[in-house]
Amino acid sequence: MSSDRDQPGIDPLLSREAPEADPAGGAGPREPATGDMLLDPEAIAEDEALFFGDDTWIRFRRPWGFWRRLLVLGGGLALVLGGAFWWGYSWLQRQLDPPGEPQGRLVVEIPSGAGVNDIARILAGEGVVANATIARLWWRDAEGLQAGHYYFAGNMSVAEAREVLEAGPIPPAFESITIPEGLWLSEVADRLLDSLPEFDPAELQTAMTDGGIRSRFMPEGVTSLEGVLFPDTYQVDEGGVGDERDLLRRMVEQFDTVAGEIGYDNALARIGLEPYQLLVAASIVEEEASRSEDRPKVARVIYNRLNAGMKLEMDATVLYAIGQRKSSITSSELDVDSPYNTRKFPGLPPTPIAAPGRESLLAAMNPEPGPWLFFVLVERDGTLFFTDDYDEFLVRANDARARAVF
Image (cartoon, rainbow, N blue to C red; front, side):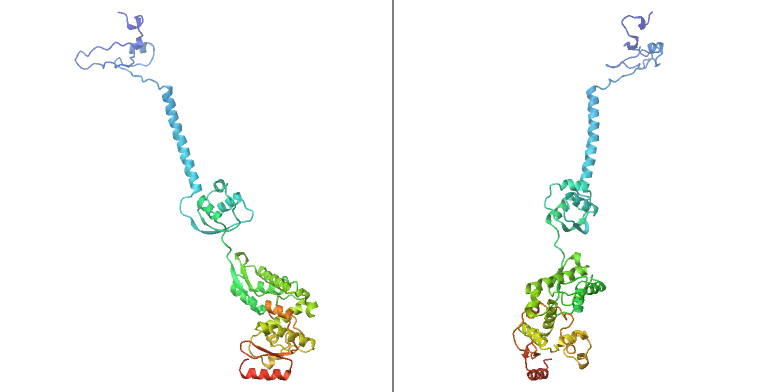
């Protein structure tokens, strides 16, 4: 009998003939299901292909179609892109708003002329924002950002930092220092050191006496700033608390401004004294007279005595010479050997003896006409008595002393 192989039109590898049932009544090989592809073992063996038992059936699944593959590929690509997008979005959010709360307080200076790029770089360098490039992109439309000092915190969001910038810089922190009229240079130094502990005492003393800072009314050879530190209220910001010379320079500039307004440039023509000599006279007026109405009269006494060739004999100059402020002077102190002792030496002292205020500067420039050569304190409120009679002066002086006015 010929084999299936010999039958025309039948492929031996695709025979659909079912095996016979098991004679013992057991279940024979399963019937091939619809769609199963059957292999003829003998044909495979004859073709030197893989050998299978004669009861082996192999089921082949159809290969995936094009659209199914495309769907799987698209799904995988979507997962990759979605993951990349999520990672990028999370990274961007961390740059815009880092995790955690802002930390501490930082004072950051934005210099004049800084643009958005510079500000972003400065704040990233200080740890205020996480990323300079991201901050720059988010602030590209910001306008009117000002130079100055700002309070920031570390680890701020880009939006929070922008709000701080747009609110403007913090007002400069000022220290107010008031220098009253009539202080000696040493007392001005003490006042400055008390108000500004950052000042170095040695540096301050050097700056006051080395001639590096000068008033335009100071003659050659004079280096002390005695009398040319104008008494006023000065503001010192954070940048100036350690700069002794800057504050002294401002005080001298203020003196030059006020003296110029009053007319000290014309002192020689008006009063017959050089501007610096007029300043010395104004400092004596400041120390000797406490009431506004008495100051022009004291200035007249000074000029009258100078014109008469008399010693000035002003107690304020003696106190300056001994370096003490006191209500009474001993005989030995009256005889102190100092060019500032006008009881012993004629003429004006070599420098001012205090810092005169505007009223005393005006009084020295505009003395009240009168013949007076003497004055004495007669009331505790500072009232002075003026006279050109020495005997009358002695009477009023003894009376005031008896009443413990001085």
